[in-house]
Image (cartoon, helix red, strand yellow):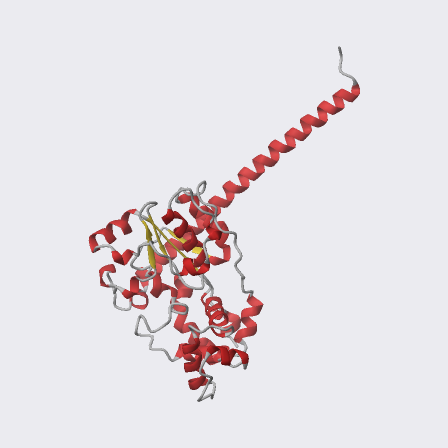
Length: 323
C-alpha cells in the first residue's frame, strides 16, 4: 500500500527531527573537543611562561634557593599528596582550594565515594589522613615529584589580596583578630582596640583596606614565612621554579579547568566535582576598593607581588598603577 501524503509528512518530520538530534549531538561533541583543546593550549602557554620566567630571572624567583632540597619543612606545608591516584596538589589560600581539598578527603576515604559537597568546610580546611609531600623521605619526595601529576590553581594577585582582606577582617573572625588589633594599633590610630573580636565587630571597628596594604608593605619580605599564607605570594607557597607543575589552573575558569583536570587524573567518571560557587570579584570592584589606597602604595604593592603577576600570566593593572 502506498503511503499517504500525511504519512509522508510525518515520516519526513521524524527524519528531520532525528537529523537535528544527531547534528546537535555532533556539535556538543565538537564543542567539548574544542574546549579540551583550548584548555590544553592554555596549559602549554602557562607552563612555557613559567619555564621562561624562571630561566631568565632566577634571582627574582629563587630567593637564593636553587634546589628543591633546600626548601625548609615549613615551606612545603601546602603541598598535599594522593598516593593512590598519583597526584600532588599545592593549595593556595583564597584560590578556591576548598573544593579540591574536599575531593581529596573523599578519595582518601575510599569507595563508594561520597559527594564532595557533603564534606564540611572545617574538615576540608583541616583534613586528616591526607599526607603532605614533606612527610616522605627525600628520595620518595623526588620520585613522587617525577612521576605524579602535579597541579595548582592561581588567581589575579590583587583580587586575591582583596579577597583575603574581606574574608579575614570585615566579618567576625576571632582567629585573625590578632592581626586586626596589630594593624589598628600601627596604622588606624587606635592605640587600644577592643580586646575581643566580638566587641570590635559589634562596634564596627576594623582596619581599613588601606591599613591592611600598609601592613603588607611593612613586612620583612626577605623572610619566606613573614606573610600569613592567605596573603603570602603564591610563588612562595608552591615554588613553581623548583617544581615542574603539569597543570596550572586559573580561578577565573576554575570549574571548567577542574573538570578537565579530573579527566586527566582519570577521575572524571568517578568523582562528582563540587559545583562552582566562587564569588568572582569584578574589575570594577577591585578599582573601587583600591581607590582608597594612595597611588604610591599601590605601586609598591604591585612590586611586592610582581613575581606572581609575571609567573602566572596576569596583566599589570595599569588602571591602578597609572594614577
